[in-house]
Amino acid sequence: MEPAVRIDGKQVAAEVIATVKKHTAGLVGETEITPGLAVVIVGEDPASQVYVASKSKMAKECGFHSVQHTLDAGTKQADLLSLIETLNNDPAIHGILVQLPLPDHIDEGRVIQAIAPDKDVDGFHFINVGKLGTGEISSAFVPCTPAGSMVLIERVRGRDLSGLTAVVIGRSNIVGKPMANLLLAANCTVTIAHSRTRDLPALARTADILVAAVGRPQMVRGDWVKPGATVIDVGINRIPAPERGEGKTRLVGDVDYDGAAEVAGTITPVPGGVGPMTIAMLMANTLVSACRIANRQPPVF
Ligand code: GUN
View 1 (cartoon, rainbow, N blue to C red):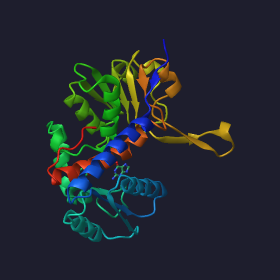
View 2 (tube, rainbow, N blue to C red):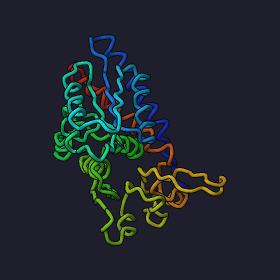
View 3 (cartoon, rainbow, N blue to C red):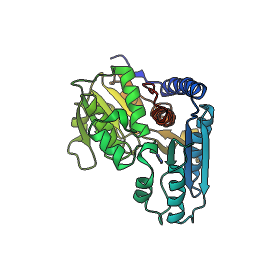
View 4 (cartoon, protein in one colour):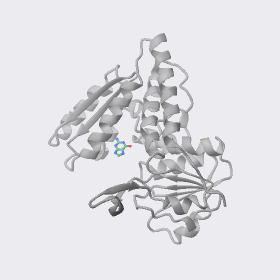
């Protein structure tokens, strides 16, 4: 078989960002509204700091009003909730993102549900989860990683996925469940697999679209993949890479790329696949939020 075509997430993310920039310029030129994104981080987790800094920077590049609130690890839950209340009521802010995880003394669920649903660009509020689950996608916010994965799938297979079999490995609220709902809304026959699933390799082999979001390095092997399938690898795992020198590491996905690429039709790499799409869709969601306030038709991504 021909080796799989690699899906270039960096390229598609750049196209999404270009669309965001163009529509932001139009919005700013023709209305009084500039999309505003507030990113909140509590504590000093180094990975979270890197993510948050790149979100704030990309927001500026898009022409947004971008604010970052960096709170120390000991911040009281009540103070975080009062900051969210202020941002909920600030007309210059259209998107609020509280970086997860939060320190143990803060109730993450409480904080997420305190964000105004119409500014919840992460799509984690019950209102947005419910809209996605009932197919009210045009007025929802969809979580960024599954939304970005869906854009990549549609680039390869078109917007109507009618009748295709999809298997999502992983049932998290951030990726697995919303991903399954998006595929269902696009008329796929969807199965969610997880740690208790029996004979996962056989189930995975039924999938025209196989999404791996479990956080286990290279778990999905080539012989789990149906010939010609579209494989979307959401995993980002750091593993030892002694071949690069002592103590060195490298990033791999939840899919054994080389093995799967011998069988798949199309496949996303790690890094450079789903990763760049996540931040691009955060920008897209923030623009969409501002368009709703301005009563303008948002672009379709
Ligand atoms: N931490 C890891 N992924 C995410 C995400 O998508 N949103 C937020 N807010 N925090 C995260």
